[in-house]
Image (cartoon, rainbow, N blue to C red; front, top):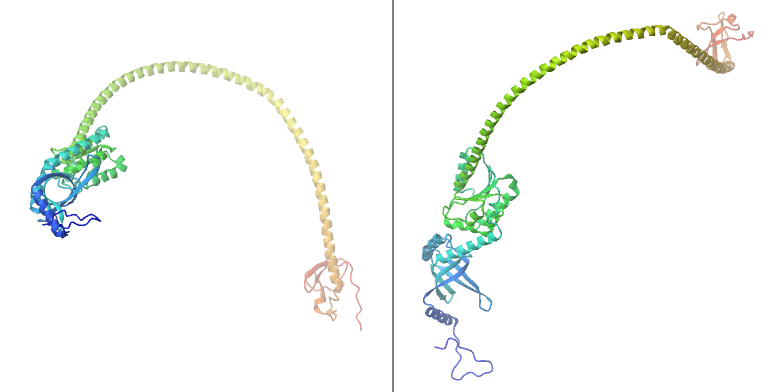
Length: 511
């Protein structure tokens, strides 16, 4: 068989004449690697590693696949990281997984440090892998305890372990912000206890996942939802309806414990474990074992407050009754004192009234005599004062009469002047109208006057005919045409009343 580590000759050097070059197939090389590892690492070995990736069995008979890593610092200060695939076969997983979960309180999960007993396996096609044949839960328990101690130390450094205890718990916490799973049996027990209590609680549920890897983030999200509404609640209650011991590790999360420790409202926890205490319980204001115990605590707190208030009420009632009785006694004493004082004052006032009545009668008679004397003096002065006032008023009337007469004469002259001026205008207008009428009469060429059945006519157009009639409209005879006679001038378009100033000379009819 040729050597395993055959080296090619250096460049430029001739090959050894007695040792020809031999090329190995890959399969044969890997077979030799497998044989060598089987001979060199025939036993199983305990190793410590961290689970970087995990594929749990999805059905019965499936295997569990892991990716193990180990990162440490060498003596020279370099970061060294090792990684290998590992397999827990189905039958062995069914044996190891329940024991590991029972003793450590949690199942295999990513990020968990474990101590495993493994066998080194190598396959020409799949490469190097480790077969897990055993798990040491005690190492994981110790690592979890170390992580728990580290979490508690960091909380103490940030003053988050006792901050909740310094918050005052309300005397009557009735407005509750409950963080729990809506389907949890513990929540139903909690609500049943509150409903059976004689006190009214206002419960608002903020749903959250209470188990699994997503539980810490879900509970923190619920706390963030409560924070803007903290004025509407008295306390926050975190309850969990039981479960396996593995679910308790979610409540050792540093982020969740810090969120509870720094919350501005008192937080009560009822996670549901009788013997174990989570880190969350250490940062809460008060830790109770179960949701039922939490409800009983709230009810008993109200009951104690109710008893205290009832005692205070009874004591206040007794003190009030004693005070009322004492006040009634003082009131009776004051009533007697007031009655005696009132009677004394009444007698004094009656005496003073009699004195004032006598004084008033004397003063009234004196005042009456004084008024009689004043009236007599006024009666003597009244005729002279009346005569002086009458003379004064007569003088004023004469002065007013003179002024009125002057004003009347002035107004009369002004009115006469206005009447003369108005008559002048009226006469002028009448003369103008008469002149216009005479002009129209002068232009007229025919006059018709009824005379003994003979009518004087001229051959003109009817539009220039003028009729002389009596004012009543009857025909006017020639002998009635005299100066001063009143006539009616009837024109085709109008009628005029006029008076003759001189009769027209009678024309001889032509033969």
